[in-house]
Length: 361
Image 1 (cartoon, rainbow, N blue to C red):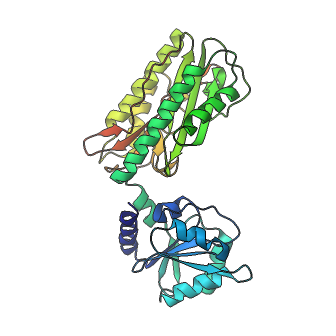
Image 2: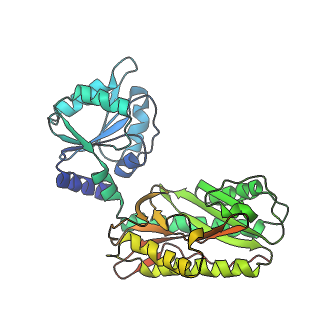
Image 3: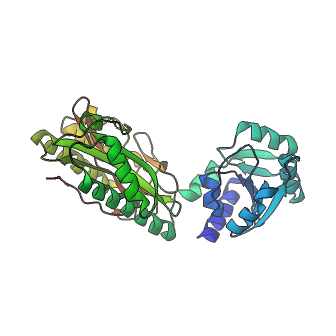
């Protein structure tokens, strides 16, 4: 899978006229190299020349770790009393790329950019978004397989958490349960737990609120699984659902399915949003659907493509995104139903089909 990614990145470098790509700690570096490392004041990066193998730069005391983690390429190091940007400039110059176009990580710190520019004054620097995001937005079969598992973990963990919830627990208690369930098969990435009127907050954090009998409970959670994320929301009731809740839930469910039926290759992202929004608006609850329909998902929880009004990007097979319509009535309750899907030519598929209508008796 890593070799496929590197070939794709180099192909895209050619399309935008760049001879080199530089990536720094974060998800893009992980995507390109399989190495996950965190930003610090010490320079760590990978140089990806279009016509050569990757070259990693790291502090000398990190060399053994990087040599163990990298699958392709070599490692160059710098000592604590040396200027690492001088080493970066030398490597690029030795590759005869010092007067070429270089695509730079769009999350690069500005201070680092100035220091790189100081050692490579003749290079033309451009944003790497058109290379890296274009590569990441279409998922390979291998990536989709990992995402299916991540989505299943999210769905199963939320359902198992619901089975353990009883009146008298707090949202914080439930947050601990979902974290434990996610940890059994992946690594917890996030977990929103909102009950009663708190469920009307689209992105509310768990609080000490006590869950009462017949309360609405919304859980939005996902794991990291081998570098990929799942993102599922289930809204249910701890007890008996009211007639108003059932009415709202049915509308949100139908909106979710309307978007699902719309998403396919060649459709504009904004039209997927519109399919769900029009249905909710027709039912008289349009003003209560306060956010976009969905977002891309992959090695990040939120990435391209975004299902939102104004986004005219055409969906392509292999893109993965969420479908998460919601109705949020302030002071009462909220309902969100979120699924993860992969776009196909003739439609879309659930990465994992989460059971719905889980009323807890």
